[in-house]
Each structure stands twice: as C-alpha cells, then as structure tokens.
Length: 461
Ligand code: ARG
Image (cartoon, rainbow, N blue to C red; front, side, top):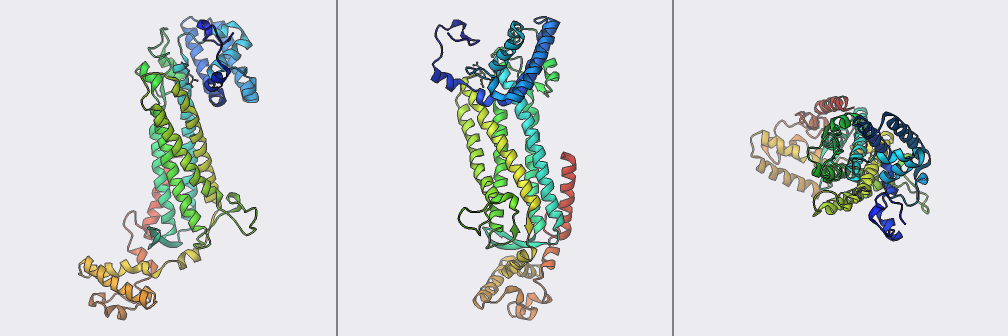
C-alpha cells in the first residue's frame, strides 16, 4: 500500500502511470532552497505558538540545514523514487533524518499556500537576476555607443534607406527600449513579493500564526489580504512571462538587425568567434547562430506565456492541480531570458564595427528630405517642396547621378527657393547639426542621450 502522506483514506495505491504524471519533483526541485527557507521560518512560528518545543525547533532547523547541503550536493538522487513533489520530498527526507518530530511541521499549512509562497520567492530572485543581467547589457550598449560616437550609418524604414543616423543613436535606441524593461520588471517586484503563507488550503490557517513575522523572516514586501486569492493567484506569473516576452521581442529585433548588418551584403558589423559557428561542410562560413537562437527562442518564450494564459483561463476558484503546470513555463522562460541577456552582452562586448563601410553605404538619395526642408523653410508649402524634390530624385535616378552631386546652381534650375543652399548642402555634418533637438541624431543631442543613459544606469545598478 502507498506510503504517501495523504493516503490515510486510500485503500489502493496510485497507478504507476498516474504517479508519473502527478510527479513534479523533476522540476520543482529547483525550489528546494525556498522550500527549506519557508519550513525554517514556519517552524519558528510553530514553536512560538507552542506546537513545537524549543528543542524540536532546534532539531528541525538543524535537520533542514543539513538537508539543504545534501540536496545541493546530490540533487534529485537523494529523494525516494515515489516522491511526489519537493514539499513532500523535503518533509519525508527530514523525517528520515530527525524522526517523527518532522511530521509536526505541516500543522496549519497546506501545500497550496506553500507552493504559492515558494514560487513567489523563486521568481522574485530570478527577476532580480534578470534586472541585473539587463543592466549589464545596457552598460555594454552604452559603452559601444560611447566608444563610437564619430560613426555614421544609414538609417532604415521599411528596410529601405531612409536617412542617415549616428551609429551611437542607433545603438542607444535599444538601450532606451530595454530601459523600460528594467522599469517593468522592477515594477512587478512588489506584486511578486506578496506572501500567501497562512492561507493554508484556501480558508486561512486555524493556528494563531503571525503572518507578519513570516513576512519579515521570508523577506516579503507585504502579505496577501485574502486566503482564497492567496492560494489561487498566478497573475504575477503571467506578468513575469509577459515582461519576459516583451523583452525577448526587443532582443529578437536586435538579433534580426545584427544578422543583416553583419552579413556580407551589409558588412557593417563583425561578430566575434565567441558567438558564431562554422559550417560542417563549407569552410568559409561564420554563422550568427547566437543571434538566430535569440530570435528563435523568442518564439518559445512567447509560447510559454500563451500556454499559461490558456491553463489559467476558466479555472474554478482557488487551488486546482492545473496550477502545477505553471512552473515549467516560468522556470524555462526565466532561464532562457537570462541566457539570452548574457550571450547578447558578450556579443555586444566583442563585436567590431566597420565605420568605413557604414559611412560609404549611406545612399545619397537619403539626403532628399534636406532639399525639401530647405524649400519649405524658404517659404514653399512642404507638399509643393516634396513634389519638386521628387522630380529631382527621379531625374537623378534616370541620369544615374548621385543626388548630393547637385550644386546650388543645378538646384536653382528646379526652384529659385534653393538660393544660398550652397554646394555642400548634402554634407553629413550639416544633416546632423539640424537635428539637435532632444531625442534627435545631432551630435550634441546624442551626447545628451548618453548622459541620460549613464544616469539611468547609476540609478538602477
Ligand atoms: N506540486 C503541487 C503544485 O506544484 C503542490 C501543491 C499540491 N497541492 C495539492 N492540494 N495537491 O502545484
């Protein structure tokens, strides 16, 4: 017959097939430290209210500490084969170690509030790690932008050349996008750090435990206000999975750009050997696998998020075993995003840029707006100016001439409003100097961006 802790009312054992399906130890073992920390704090409360003697409490704390080291060393091996989950596993290993007194630690708690608490502790620590890794990546981007402030490159819309930009402006676009991810993850921390322990199965513990003591010992920000919500709520996981998905989309967009920009056709960037691979047949190949995997894993991360939304949709109130499905998705997404952040940081730290190539790739037609702006600033309605310049562009394309080769004299042939434009109207420095408003690609405006970014990192790191 089953030795399971809950099997008092059972006369038959579980089917081995169901047992396998029911078992979560394979993945919830990741939370062994959190479960031990929880049991340690909870036992202290039990001793305070007299359920455990001071001596029992000491024995339990020492036993749990030993167990933590053993699980750290040996992993899943030390658990009996029929262990259902980490909570049952720790309780039964503790009983093996210190005897029957271990059986007292579950008084007044349920695995429902226990698992909800463990997951919150685990996710909180991992989200903090995500924020740290994210700040490292932001620092790498900032350094790349600072070290290459002189470089210019074509800017694209619709993946067609639009207008030139400073390379540092381009790189900082990723910085500012991901600075919002730092804020999003940080903003979620207090919601994650809401303690359900004390909710018991669903109705609240029948023991006079002090949840405020537990909150302090377990380092939570606040306690949940409703036991039914306490055991059920997983919106903090949806929020974390959504935040991870949003961040992964930015990393994937960066990856897509960099795959293109490091290709032979563009030749803007060189990726280091640390993050590229060769081909098993073509000796010439250096493939951007790290970037492709970043793009690819984004699909998986979004899949994890979607999966949990579907799992939670339509669940009846409070704990249902469906909730056991939350962990693999969240653990996987957290690990994946941390890997992606670390590898992207290495890629940014070690890449080289080809300034010559970026500069010479700027298409002279991408200065067309300068001409239209000049006419508009000289009194022509912008739409009319746009039309005139459109004709000039068409002529240049037909005559296979570069737009910026047109002198003031040539331009006056199209409109008298080009008067005093000068022959160097298509100079890149002139282009940049006109864009010094905050957020523009002017050299000083970008210096200001770099300053803002430095302050941001000082605040968050
Ligand atoms: N392994 C379970 C989970 O991850 C723990 C909670 C089980 N609770 C229960 N009432 N069977 O959700």
